[in-house]
Every structure is written in C-alpha cells, then in structure tokens.
Image: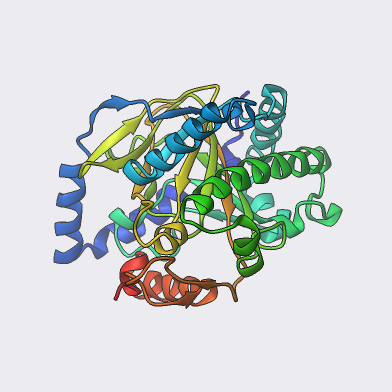
Length: 342
C-alpha cells in the first residue's frame, strides 16, 4: 500500500531543531549510546508454551510456571506461544492499524481520534539521544468501546475490543504465575492492586523508516512503568534489550507474543523479577508496526515490596507516574525505580 506523504508527522523538522542544543552532557551520552548500540548477534528470547498451564499433567503445569519465573528473573523478557489469540485477529489488527496510521497527519493530530491519544516524536527531547522516530496511539481501555472515539475508523472499534480482551487474558494469566511464586494469593493481590479495563492501556505503534542517522532510535532506551507488557510485533525487527550488560537484538517470531516485566513487578518482587531496559532502532528502509498491552494498576494502588528488608520504599502508582513526568520534563529522560530505592 502506498502511504501518502501527508500521513507522516514532521519528525525531521523536530529532530533538526534539537540538533543545535547538544551539550557536553548530551555528547557524552551519545558516545556511550553509540558504543552500546553495537549488538551481539541476534538472539531468540526464551520461548514458553502457555498451553502447558492448562495441561492435566501437574508436572507439565509446574514446569511451565518455572520457565516463566526463570525467564522473568534472568531475562525480564520472554516469548509465549499457544497463547490463544488467533492469527486472524492479528491480521485484522494489522489491517486496521495500517489504515489508521495512513490517515493524514493533520487528521491524526487534531481531530481527537481514540480519546485524543495520538503522539509522535518526543516533545520533551532536549537532545538527539532523547528523540524517538515514531508515532503512536496510547489508548486507555476505558475508551476502547466508545463509538465517539473512532470517527471514520468505525471498523477499528470491534477489532480493538476483541484484541484488548485477549491481551488482558494473557497478561493476567502470566501475572498470576508470578504472583503465586512470591507466596501470595492472586485474589489477595487483586484486592490490593486493581488492574482491569479501567486502568490498563493499548498502544498502537508505527516506527517510520529513517535514513537521517545510522543509529536513530525508533523508541529511546527505557523500562516500562507497569507490571507486565504484552507485545505483538511484525517481522521487521528492531527491538533490542540489555542482557548481561550488552545490547541484544531480538529475533522476531511470527507465532509468539513478547512479554516483558515492568518496573512495578520489579519493585513488588524486591528485585527478583527484572524490568529490563529496551529500545527500538529505526530501520532505514522499512516501517515497523507493533501493538503493546500495558497491565497497569489504578493511580491510588500502593506498590510495596513483598519481601523484607524491602529494596524500595512504598509508593503509589500515581506518585510513580508523577515523578517520571517531572524527571522527563527536567532532564529529558526517565529515572524510574532508582528514585524510590532505599
């Protein structure tokens, strides 16, 4: 499909505006990033068959749970297959996502689509190493079923409703395994921490081709500010994560969903589960599409380490989000859990 030129946000203009503002601090950061951007060979994340959790053989169920726990502790990232989401739904999502992003930039940015959730580039970027060459819709699940959010993209609504429900089911299944491993009951956790359609998000991403710079970020290095993220991506590649203090490129797997641990599970588990820094590198010739589901709690949910002595002080999710926004505004980047470590 040919994409109209006016569907592309003005990323080049924004990027060029911040080039003159490089400081000694930014240059040092860039040098470090360029050194770290040299990846080892591409690696496949641990692959876990989720169907085993429903196996009648207790040994199979236990083994699957142990694989999830090990991957969450050693990698912070893993892949799941036999997750129950049909290829047909993924295909429909890709079709709708492509049509949405191919809309004129003026339409996406000014008409309040999907709860006015459209964003592009990095408005807070102070330097090139803080800039993301991408666009996205970051949609609260509370608005997914709202007909008024879709405008002429009415066929997207039915797909998103089904997609969000399927992703939530996978996220809660995996979260349940990780919670029980900490010696807690899922019911008790859910009573304390509310993670449902009123608190979670879907993010539709498009990473546009970029030939301006060889090491352009599609999405800057970061950790996720949630409990768990479930990602479905196309086969273009570009996702990288830190493993053993080195950047590793992740091999796409068309049959798998990618799961990664967020900051809140690292804090809750007292550093047993790892929220790992990751990034997306822009492709010079091809666009990349992905959809992420974020398992987030309510803003008043109290996040506390489940073990003693705790590595982190207690904080609410609202407090955590506010601190991230404050740091991003002042410094152009997130510091995350380090602000709450004791």
